[in-house]
Structure formats: structure tokens, C-alpha cells
Length: 622
Image (tube, rainbow, N blue to C red; front, side):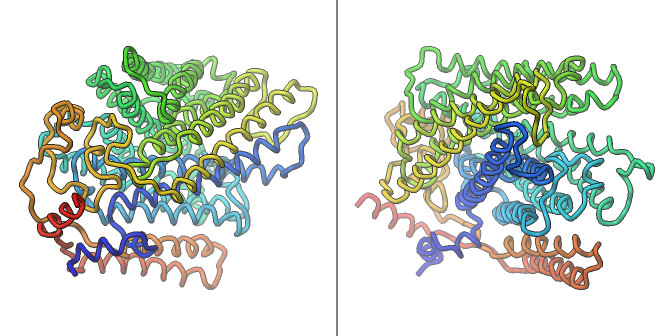
């Protein structure tokens, strides 16, 4: 049996997923892990809303509430939204540019396992003495003083997970720059690929400041460095700068791929080319650039002074211009189109006003003088969730329905998809719209309870009922996935009928090698151009020949596992645990041993022979 035949027969086993370097299987791993953490973060959100549903509630204690609210924010941002977005990037971007895989398949797998083990490490804190309790921003004045190991789990877990995200972003950058199919110029790339490109550049520059901040806090927590301890001459505001130099680009790291997903959905289901493609590209790049110039709008009340506040207020308002360009272009794409109201299109329609509401409140918060009133109230909570849930989470649901048939070869049920949409859409606005008013009425954020008679009772109950609707929507979505997987009704390469880009030109799910022959790209919406000429397949840019693919490897898993083990030793070494130092050494030996073995291993991949491809094609036609 040829190596290729063995590869085909091996698919679907647990070992295959533990050792895979195939970007499509890594995408599925990201979706499973991100989905799992999304459920955990959602349960934490439900606990928050149960606690705040009525005044003087004692569902959880003050300390437990701090842990839940910290873990909800941290989990949703770092362990749910990011990996789910990375799942779509892995599944779609290489197909959209006509590549057979990403530039560094091994590194791609390593990035996933680092994220996964970092996330598991962080969540183990629940079972090992208590979760972090200093808020998802982990401000140094709270974090340094926090008792127990909760904040240490935060520091070490995010360092491991963030390393995986960083190398993943570098991998995507190199892939897009070097591995585009013949004819795929930059200005012919689909919008989702463009947003992946800009997002990856943001990751490259935004994650190092966070890593530096986490390392400095680790020195404070584990080695007594007193860098952030004010009584010892430290400065807590430095942490805020380091965190938000990462934290504000992080918003665009999440929202730009969401923009990309909606920029794919609207043309497909309007049967029209995306309006103003060039301006959309330049708006995407400009948002990425301006995203690094606005971080201090999170710090208007820290006393940076009127000049600094004014500069960051103007920069924050300026970022609304390219975002506004995008919104008008999406509306003009719909204008005059032959619109199909599929489940993905429901999410796209709902996204525009929902995200716009988040943007408008963002402009309100950008005014430094007004921000003194809004700051640390539920108005900020409402704004943030209108951007992240109304933008990113809507896009995750939309992208899941759009690309499920491409990833798995079977369609999610449309009726159940629309039930999910309406439950979530109604629940989302019930939960967060009223929170704007709670903030304006004076309810502070991060409080675990409130007194009766303050005027907060009814609004908090409405907000909590909305959260129950969103929880019900997620349950319906899970049932939809299970039912679809059991029925397993197969679909063709272009199940929506109006696919415009290269991913819709190949079978669903795609073969291991993606493209038998690299496609020749002759313009924007490359597959649509071929269909308009009556062709069912892309014109090949090369003759049929052998295809070289990378071998699977267990080493990414063991490399990440070693850091996971070492983190426990590093954390408990400060308590002088006898076993801590040996555990740390063993973990580092596993990591560096795996890296060394990888460097000396004779791994040249394998070839899919032309004869195998011809046999497969003949079998498919038969």
C-alpha cells in the first residue's frame, strides 16, 4: 500500500488527530476545543446573571463571583473567541488562496497544542485551590495582592496559550505572502483572507507586550520582584499600558476576521460582487494600523493628563471612519441584490445594526470627559458585549453554518439554524441593551450584588432572562450538530449554489492535498468567473503530477505537554514543594527533547503519486 493509501485509511482516529499537521484537521481541533471553552464561558455567564437577577442574592459568595467573572472574561476572549476564529482561518484561508497547506504545518499543529494545554492549565485552577480573581484584565494592584495560586494559573496559562497564538499568526502571514496560487495577486484575495492577513500582523505585534507584562507579573508573584508593588517603589499603571497595548488590538484581532466572514456571506447570498472591494481592503488595513494608536482610551481615568487623553480620544473617533466605510459597503452589497434569507444571512443582517450600536457607544466612550461618568459602570459592559457578541459571536455562528458543509460535507439543518438565530438574537438584545441604562443609572460593574430600591431590580431580571434565551440557543445549536452528524447527508462542492471563491471549487470535505492541480486565478471571485463561462472546475495552472505532503508528527503534542508539566513545577516551587523542581525539570526536558528530536529527525514528508490521483478521479466518476 502506498503512503497516500495509508493516510487515507488512517483518517478519523484519535491518534490521527493527536498527530495531524493537516490544516483542515487542525481547524476541527480548534473548533472542538474552542466550542468546549465557549460552553464553559457560557455557563460562567449564566452563573453571573443568576447571581445578579435579584438584589441581595447569595447564589455565590463575593469571592466566588470574582473568580467566575474573571474566568468568564478570560475564557471567552482567549480560549473561545480566539481559537474559534483560528479554526475558520485554518479551514478556509489556505483553500481561498489555492494552497495545499499552510507554510509550516508542524508549527501549525504546535500552535494548537500550546493553546489547548494553556487553556486546560488555566481551567484546572477551579480544582486546585481556586480560580484567578483579579478580573480578566488582571490589574496589577489586585493581581499582586491576590492570595492562593489563582493568578499564577492565569499568568502561566496565558503565556503558554499566547505562544501558540503568536506562532500561529506568523504561520498565516508567511502562508499568505508565499503560497498564493498563480494569478492570486493581493488585490484578488478574498476579504476573509485579507482580514486573516491583517489580523496575523496584529498578533505579531500585539502579543509580545502581553507576554512581557505576564513575565513581569510572574517575577512579582513567584520571585518577589516588586515591579508592580507601589509600597516597594513599583508602578501598577505600567501593567495597564502593557495589557492595553495588547488589549485594544486584540479587539480587532477578533473583529476583523468576523468582518471577513460577513464579507463572504453577503456577496454569496446577494448574488453580487462585494461592493467597493478596494476600499474594503484599505479600510481593513487602516483599522489594523489605527488599532495600535488607541489603547489609552481604556485609561482615561488613570490621570495621564488632558493632552494625552485628547490625542487618544481623537484617534479612537478616527477608527470609526474605516469601520463606517465597511458598513456602507455591506449595505450597498445588499442593495439591488437577489437576497436569499439563509441562516448565515440572518446572522449577517442582524450583525450590521447590532455592531453599529456597539460602535456608537464606543464613540461615546471615546470622549474623555464623558468617559469619567461611564467608566466602570454597566454602560461599558453593554458596549463591550455589543461589539464582541454582536460582532464576533454572531460571525462565529454565521461562519459555522456557512462553512460546515465545506468542512464536513454535510449541511446543518436550516430550520434549527433559524431557531438558534432567533433565540440568540432576542436573548442578546434582552441581556445587553438594558445594561446601557443600568450603567447610566449608576450601577457599577464587577459588583456581586446590589441593594433593593436602587432602581436596578427589573432591569437586572430582564438581563438575566435574556441570558437564558442565549443559553437555549446554544443548546439548539448543539442538537442541530448532533442530528446533522447522525444523518450525515452528503453535499457537493458548492452546496449553497452561489460560491464565489476557490474553496467552493473543490469537494466537500476537501481532500488531504486540497487541490489536485493548483488553480489559475484570473480575477476577483475566481470560481465565480469560471462558473460564468460554464466551467464546473477551475482552470489548472499546472499539469497533473506528484504532490508532496508533510508527514504527521506526535512531537507538537509532546512539546506543548512539556510546558504544561513544567508550569506546575514553576508555580509550586515558590511554596518550596519538594516535588516542584523535579517536575519543572522533567517538563522542560520533554519540551526541549521534543524540539531536539524534531531538529535531527529525517522527515522529508511523502508523495501522493500521479497514478493514485488518476485512480481516485476514475473512482469518483464511476
